[in-house]
Length: 163
Image (cartoon, rainbow, N blue to C red; front, top):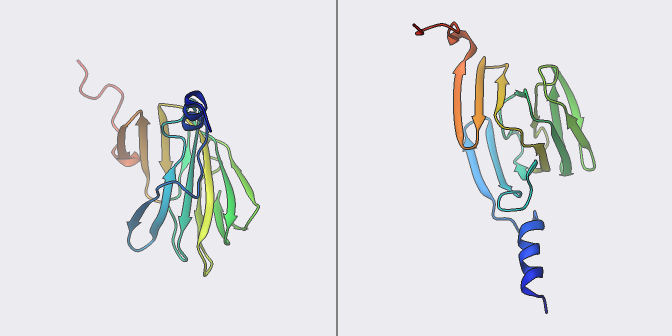
């Protein structure tokens, strides 16, 4: 029998990635995943974590890099490819991938196998955050539920529209 305090602590501090309610995401033809954010509603302040399951031949997000956040991926099941800094690196179960912030390490994970690729995505949660997408020339700024995306080619001069 647990106490009320123990139940409160469990709710703030513990998540089970297998039991988490996962949401399906799909943007044909390249992107598809099942995933869940695990840190939401916890006591975590500076860390985020999610579980991602990517079907064969798919990826969960576009090639990108972060200006503030570091990321770590832990491959639980399946095989795939880490596209990073213009290279294609094979990945598999037990691999822990470290991605520092900055333009030196644009990245994403691709499922290049015939079975699902399951991994944990862990990140620092600095906000505001800026991401760049080298393949599409986009820049995104994130800050606590707000998102602004534009193309670098559409950038304005700092003084545009100012008196």
